[in-house]
Amino acid sequence: MATEHIIDATGKSLGRVASEAAKILLAKNTTSVKKNVVANVTVRVKHASGLALSDKKRVQTKFHSHSGYPGSDRSLSLAHIIATKGYGGALKRAVKGMLPPNTLREKRMKHLIIEE
Image (cartoon, rainbow, N blue to C red; front, side):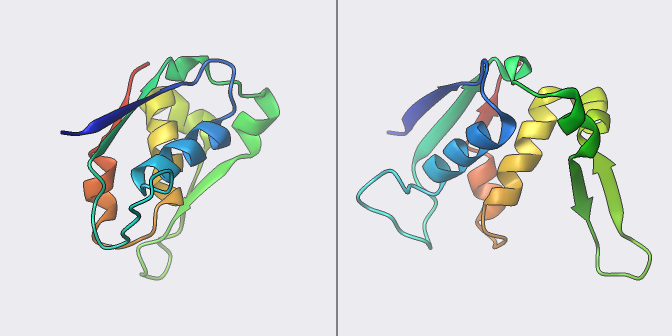
């Protein structure tokens, strides 16, 4: 039976909510932490549109990606991600960046449910 954790994002910053969700997905809050096993938890983030983001942070925060090929460096601002994918997309991208880049990352991300 999966344990469900509910995080209310109203009035909290993006990084605080993302780090709390990443800790729970990695099972750092339990006594049985195993790096090679996906924890049987579900993280539900409610009211993602209520995140406290300043206008300066929306413009200055950049999310980078690079495929490894020359000239493929992509940089998107937080405002662009919120405009295209919504607050849930920005939060999902922040949590994904806080998880270790291994084969279990996508399996852990499936346990993250974001509600606007």
